[in-house]
Each structure stands twice: as structure tokens, then as C-alpha cells.
Amino acid sequence: MNDSKRFLRPDVLKRIARLDLRARHVVEGFLSGRHRSPHFGQTVEFRQHRPYTPGDDLRYVDWKVWAKQDRYYVKQFEEDTNLRLTLLVDASASMRYGKGAMTKFEYAATVAVSLAYLVLRQQDAVGCLTFDEGPRKIVPQRTKRNHLDSIVQALEASDPRHKTDLTPIFRKAAEAYPRRGMVAIVSDLLVDREGFSRGLRLLRSRGHDVLVFHVLDDDELDFPFSGPTRFEGLEVPLYLKCNPRALREGYLTALQAYLEEVRRACSRQHVDYTMLRTSQSLGAALATFLNHRLATQTRS
Image (cartoon, one colour):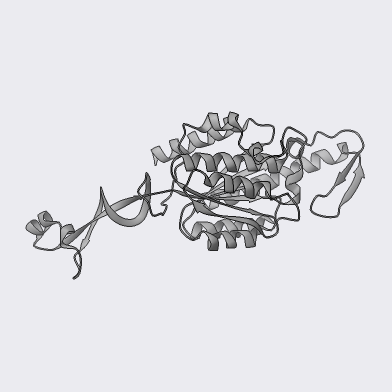
């Protein structure tokens, strides 16, 4: 399929259509919704008292406390707000790889569009930034249902090329989407791990709830090659002809060390990490992930 609808997969949307994506951490927005805000508003959910200061609205003075303590205290309430989701989608050259039904980029784009569809269905806001070594397309956060077309078009226009450099991307995302919300990173994470860790710290320091969807092809995870093979670097000028059997053990050991380092970086920053194989049913994977988020939020 060459049109933009190729990222709107009905089988995926059907699986997740009834699930809510909610921020675990405090989020910020303008409209009344179901998501807790750090700002104080005028909703019915009481949060705390604070001492009265001249100029405070007398409607919020707690007269019962005054009657007991002969002191003025003001009641504060928590405001409900919309979720603001930012999608950071890797469009670097390594995302072109894929032997199955979808390349890594097509799989990642489908993840992004599925989440965007879900968030817009909840009447929440979503924006998108595609990147390689720098930002490619930046779509502002909007709540209108037809905003999905803008996100799909940005992904359609982001043909994978160049190398990945996450450090300036995370910085740009923090600038382009300054209000606290949820940030979903969809990438193969074939990047400098220290830069990745710094980027996560930056986003978390800005108060964002961060999700990482780590998209890899089965070949990258299982290294199934057996006969004489020519390996070609997609982001670096590397060509290697060899018998892959001699490389497999060392490769898988290095891969596990790399995956563990990525998981630890996410864990240190309290970031939700999800590994996705491109052969994996995306609908089932997202349904499992969203149910996990909902269950974790319910327990917290």
C-alpha cells in the first residue's frame, strides 16, 4: 500500500479501541478531562489546605477550620486536564531494515498512528516529531479527530535515511512541547547509549511521563544467518563478508549486554520500556502494554 492509510491498520485499532491510555505521572493541559494536573483548579476533588494570604478568594476559605482554630485556611483542589502525548518516531536509515510484512519503520509508524488514534478518540491531544540525526517533521499537539491525517502525512513523508542522534532530538522535543505530558519514543535505539540516557533524564526532569517502544527485527534479535552472508551497514559505510556462524555467539552476547543497558537506563529514570519484534502481533502487543499501564495506575 502506497497511500497514507497503510499505517492505519484496522486489526490493530480494533484490539486497542476500548482501552484507555492514561498518564501515570502528573500531566498538564488546558481542557477538563480525566487526567490529573499539577495545577490547582476548581474541581470537586479536595487536595490540601494552605494558610490564607491577602487577596485570596474568600469563597475558598474553610470556615469550619476557622471556627475550630481561629485561623484562616484556603482549600485547594486538583484540576483535571487532558493528556498531551508526544510521539517521537525514528526515521533513520537503520529503520529501513525488515524481512517480514513490515520494515521497522513501518512497524514503528503503525505503533505511533495507533496510539495517536487512541488518544484522539479520548479527546486528548497528540503531536508527532519524526527524526534521524535531526528533526524531520514536527506536528503540533491537537485534539481534533482529523488531526490524525496530519500525523499520518508526516510519517508518510519521513522516508528513513541518515544516522540517528537522539541527544538533539530530545532537546528539541522538550522545546517544541514544553507542557508536561506523555512522550512515547518509538525507535530501534541503535544509538549512543550515554546520549540516550541523558535524553531520558532531560525529559523526566521536565516532568514528562516517558514510554519507550523498542522496535527490532527478528534477524537482529535471533541472528538466524547460517551460510555465507554479506552484511551492509545502513548508517555507516560498513561491508562485511563472512561465515556468520563464527559471529553468532559473540553477537548475541553483545546484544544481550546492549539490551540490558537500555533497560537499566529506562529503569533508572522510571521510564516504561517495551520490546517489540516486527513479527509480533501489534494489536496484541499494544493491548498488553495498555492493560499493564492501566493496572499499574490502578495500584498506584
